[in-house]
Image (cartoon, rainbow, N blue to C red):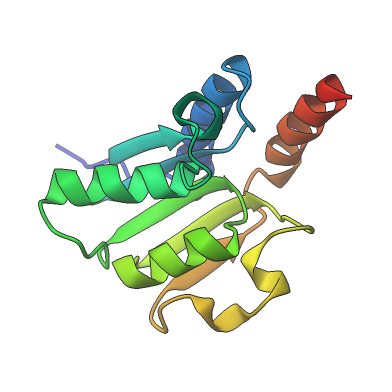
Amino acid sequence: MELTVFSDEHFMREALKEAKKAFDADEVPVGAVVVANNTIIARAYNLTERLHDVTAHAEMQAITSAANFLNGKYLNECTLYVTLEPCVMCAGALAWSQIGKIVYGASDTKRGYNLISHNLLHPKTQVKSGVVAEECAALIKTFFQKKR
């Protein structure tokens, strides 16, 4: 039996499904999945409005869920797929988790961690940006246009 290896685009589309759940719940539409051994071990989306918690970003929810799944705090063998570039808070949490790789869709030109420093992540963390970026950005743009 041959193992199917899924692409970054495949997993980003799974993160987009989570972002659409956030959109439908009137949350800022950011979604995330954590993958280990080619398998999704955590799914999350923004819950800041529902939980009345400014720290309830998709990445934070995904880190907690993945750590619970693995029964450990380090995610060095995992990849986070997230539809929007992580903010400084999430980048810090991802650094503490020692996440192995981060793949994000759209850049966040207002609050993304790259505006502050490229050194916020763990030194061994690999980063790939721009995966399905247009779709990720369009969902966020539509959300905020709807708010105006």
